[in-house]
Image (cartoon, rainbow, N blue to C red; front, side, top):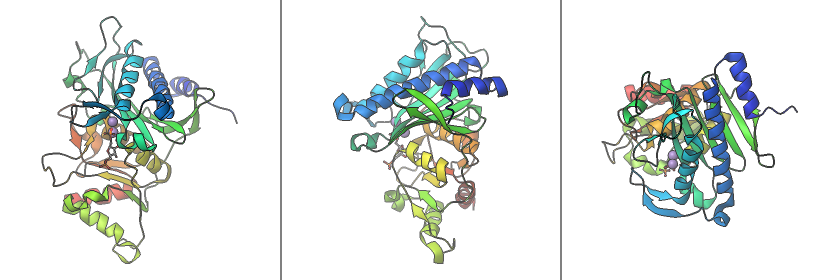
Length: 333
Ligand code: AHG
Ligand code: MN
Ligand code: MN
């Protein structure tokens, strides 16, 4: 089998479709290299003293794990000096991170969830990194938080890495979704899946059912109908999966379909869900749409939402198109 590396894929894509400018290619390669470093640290586990909590909290009031902080530092360091970025923003940092003056400033802006699935780190279950790339607004001076507040439809690239039994990198630049597997001996990313497609129908759903007593009626109705199985209104049996790492749940859906939900609920009516629009929902929604699926917040297309703050949360419904459309229509009734 002829192996196509990430570099070769990006160069060919640039040549054939002119879809990946040189600076964006550099950006993607740098992020991929950082993910390789994170994968290596994750793989060491207790031997690398990377497990456990760091003794601090992030801006959302969540306890930070050592790997949350380490992964954040790896991504910052890797991306600072290349000249491809104007600024970065991360789930783990309260304010944006402009590129230091000693380095040239580029035209892209990078956002990331450095370590997704933190509750799974210490129990050796798949975790990952999610990233989103925006262009700096025309004529931008010193970057501010405001410059990042662009709807997801403006993303020029997005992707995630899963640190699981295999380390994979799933990427879109707006021309389909491709998956690269890390060859751990060679240290290189190899193209292993081209044009990933999510089937429109599915018999599998993912939701944290322990929150069911807090759900709003449209979500309860939708899930109850699935649970009713063959003799219920859907007339088929559904299976449930919940990994508690969005990267791993989305990776399953990109491979064999399904719907992933993290709804807003009645516990804190002012809180629009748990997941973050800019670091989780938008990049995943871009990937899912590029693979033929759909993504909404229950009311509107995720990628059309105009963000109002960097760390804002959002309800998430994404995956197989017909299921996402169904649960979204229940919200509209
Ligand atoms: P993070 O580790 O970046 O904070 O994200 C965790 C997210 C997401 O990956 C996952 O789907 C969800 O939280 C799990 O939530 P529950 O703990 O409620 O299952
Ligand atoms: Mn996350
Ligand atoms: Mn995280």
